[in-house]
Length: 374
Picture 1 (cartoon, rainbow, N blue to C red):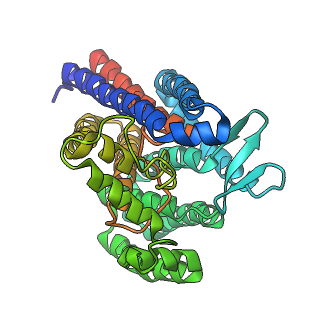
Picture 2 (picture 1 turned 90 degrees about the vertical axis):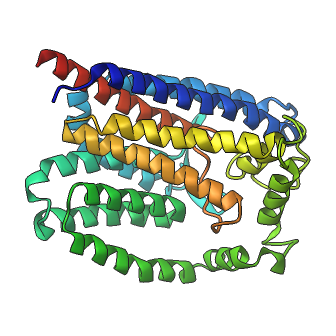
Picture 3 (picture 1 turned 135 degrees about the vertical axis):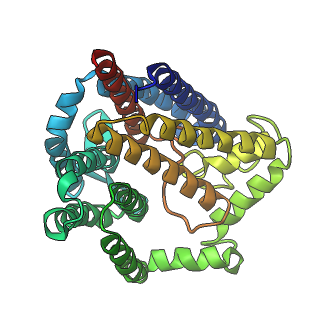
């Protein structure tokens, strides 16, 4: 069956249009949600907007790099890039290099810029998954040659993430890995056993840290401590409720006046919901649904297994992150510390997300070139 190159090109353009629109929406609401905080803390209401605009420029450069670097080179260097990302993760624990913020060692201070290596790990771990699944395609049902080695790879990655700690990234990457192994037709007994064993492990991780258990308890009843640990989610729900059907208008949020913590990062959606209401919020959610739809349409046309599995991983990962963020903001999940893809303030996350889209565009071009040759 011939590859429908015209449809593939149109779908990639549509996906890029969706991502661009989400990023522009992010710029608008990063300014709207952070202007009061920026004016109070930094002396300029444009402080966070300027930084996010600079990050957007770097994100476009990252997109171009991943879109234009020869496909075969990305595949060839995938293992080394993954090892390099693990090394960067390790540097976050080196005094003088690692930066501790909000109780987590997730950032590296590199002179004039701060970097969050976990976002790079997401890219290169998924690229390595694609590389690994392609290499092991004929032994995919083997426990000792395929499944056990990759469990070790995941274990090393998750150990570093939990050390930071970054429990949210562990959940999203673990979910993505299970989906990829399921699609690769790995032995279902291995996947079910892993999922079942993960449940007590997650329970242990929750009870091993008091703040994680506290998040669960507050999620179940935030009104038990409305002025303390339940304050954030209560203020989030108030912001969403204030928006009603049509919202109070862009830049007219009341919750951004130091009521809602993390209003331009993890909890930017409640500010969006307050300002553009249910209708606007529904439109935003539909954009993410369209991202998933067109992303899957593109990926399902890929015939080269490295590109197929890696691109599928990127689409699944970004969709899971968006879903978790939206559910947390609405009080449907405990807080996880995950931003809203393409929208929340955060440089490395935005750059990493655009790099993922660049890789998908690269794969699409590679598939079209091969189709034209054949």
